[in-house]
Each structure stands twice: as structure tokens, then as C-alpha cells.
Image 1 (cartoon, rainbow, N blue to C red):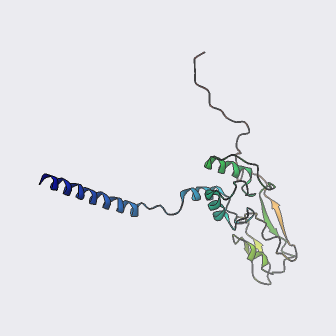
Image 2 (cartoon, rainbow, N blue to C red; image 1 turned 30 degrees about the vertical axis):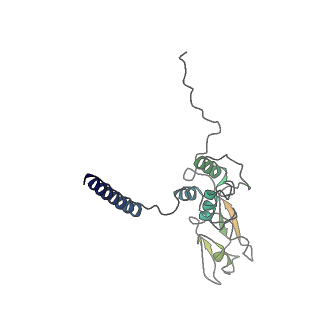
Image 3 (cartoon, rainbow, N blue to C red; image 1 turned 180 degrees about the vertical axis):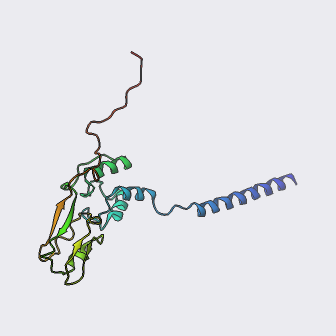
Amino acid sequence: MEITLAIAIMALGAIVLGAALGFASIKFKVEGDPLIEKIDSILPQTQCGQCGYPGCKPYAEAIAKGEADINKCPPGGSEGVQRLADLLGREVKPLDAEEKPKAIAIIDEATCIGCTLCIQACPVDAIVGAAKQMHTILPTLCTGCELCLPPCPVECIRMEVIPETIDNWKWRYPVVEIKPVPTGKAA
């Protein structure tokens, strides 16, 4: 009789704990891979494809799976490579492209023929205009990806470097490595 009671109590405990674990797995389910989200948040979100992937999210997925190097993003620059290396614990590699200063596209509105090819090429919808009408670029949305340059038949788009001001200045990583003070014997 005592053995039957002990088995029943153990079975009841297993059922209760199993139900609690089942509920917790549904309630606290993690959507997606948090590492991919962290990598994607470091990338500049230009969706330019200069890394060989169609956008920042596919590139982040490839980095997380170990299929891509962390140094393929020109808009992220060497600062982006450094931040990805810090996150992933990988070695910092030199950028695998020419590092350019941040720039935005400017349309010469007098030359624009309204062909809409630049609108179709823009991955972030920073170009507004209608067919056979002048187009313009919204500077706050332009990421400087340069994807609008090749399709323009009249070459009315140019890239203009954004000058560094107090509003857009960013602190760079220190040039000198900061090392902790060794703890040891008192002098």
C-alpha cells in the first residue's frame, strides 16, 4: 500500500511539473535568434547589398551561422567590424572594401527626366517623384548606398559627403588599447 501511494505521488508530481514546463515553453517562447537580432542592430540598415547579400538581415543571418565574414559591410566601416568582433568574440579583420565617408545622393533637378529608374532602385524609398516629373531625394531617409547611380540614364545623381558636425559626430574607438591595472604586491 505504501509503495503504491509513493508511486502515485511521484506520478502526480511528474504530471504537474510536466504541465508547468509545457506552459512555460509556450509562454516564454523566443521568436527568432537573439544573436541575429543583435548583429542586425549593429549593421547600418542601408540594405545596399554591397556585402553580397540582399540586405542587412540576410547578412546578419549569414554571420550568425558562420557563413560570412564580419568585414564585408562598407557602410558600417571599420567601426562596424570592430563592434561585430566585440559582440561575437572574433578577431578584428580589416574592412574588405574601400571605406568611404558617409554621403547622401543629390539629384540635379534641372537634368532629371523623370524616368523613375532611381525610385525603383532605392531600397529605402528615399526618392520621391512621378513618371516624367522631376524627382528629389529625402536627405533624412537616404542611406548613401549608391544603388540609384547606375540606373540613371542621364547621370543627374551625385553623391555628396555629409560634413561632420556636432549633430552627427560619433566617438571612435580609442586608438590606444586600454589595459587593466595589474593587481599584485603593494610597492
